[in-house]
Length: 366
Image 1 (cartoon, rainbow, N blue to C red):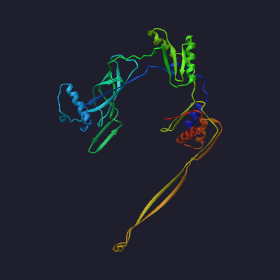
Image 2: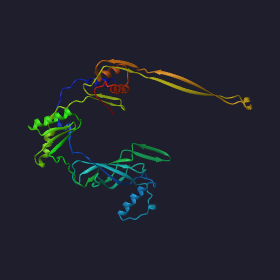
Image 3: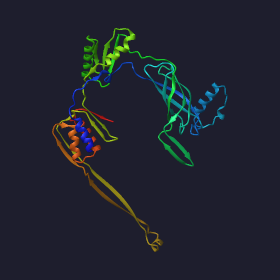
Image 4: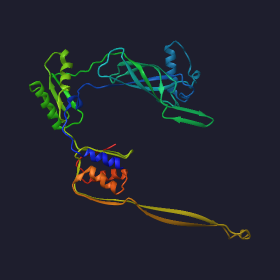
C-alpha cells in the first residue's frame, strides 16, 4: 500500500514538457494487418482427437483421402488421431511471396488435446475469399490433457496450439497509402483536436509549406505531390518530426490486481468520502431430540427437530470518513491508505467519485 501511494505521489509531480516523434502518436492510414482464416485437419494425435460422433471430422478426412487417391467409406473411419480445426493468421500490410507467418490453430470438434499433432496443408483465405497463404507443419501446444481410469489431469488449454512460421505467403500484398486525392492520412492513436492541430503545425513548419491540415480529432491529412518511389522517404521524414503531445488526464484501475495508476496533475474537487461496511451473518443449527426406547412403543411419540438461529453483526474494521479540499488522486490515495482502506475499496471510491462528477479525468477500468 505504501509503495502504491509513493508511486502515485511521484506521478502527481508536474513533469517537464517533452517532445516525441510523430511516429509515436500516429500511424499511416492503410498500413494495417489483414486477417486470414482457414479450415483444416490435424493428424498424429495420440488418441486425443475428435470422437466418432463428429461427422464433420469424418467427412473432412474422407475428402482429403479421396484427393490423395484413397477411397474409403464412412464406416471405415473411426480414428481418434485426427481433429478438425480453425486456423487463423495475420497477413502484414506488405508481404511478398514466400514469407513465413505464424498461425493459431484451434479445435472446433470434441478433441481433448492438439499436443503432438501435425496440421495438414490448409489454405488461408482473406475477406475476399482469395487464398493468401498456405499453412502446414507440426503444432506446439502450451498444455496437456491426460485421462486414465476416470483420472484426468489438464494444464492450460491444450485444444489451442501455435504453428510458428508454418504458414507461407502465396499472394503478394501491398498497402495503398496514397489516396486518390494525393493525400496521406495520419491516424492519431489518442484522438484530440489540440494534438491533431499541433501535429499539422509541426509538419508545416518542418517542410516550409501548408501541406498538412487536421481533418478531425483523429486524423491529419498530408498532401504529397512527388513520385511514388519517393513516398517512403517522405513518410519517414514526417514520422521524424517532433511534437509536444497533449497530456490527457486519465486514471487507470485494474480490478483484478487492485492496481491504480494516475497521470500527472489529475485533480479532484472538494469531496467528503464515507467508506465502511457492515456484515450481517445468520446461521441456523438444527438439533434432533430422540425419544427413549420405551417411548417408541407408543404410536403418538416421534422425534422432535429444534432449529436455533444465531444473528451476528460485524462492523467493518476499516471504516473511514475523509474530508478533502481540492486535491489530487495521489493525495486521496495517501489519505485512504492512512485510514487503512485496502486497495480494492480505493478503486470503488474512485469509481464513486467519478460518478459524482468530482474526478476531473477519464477513468479507465480494465
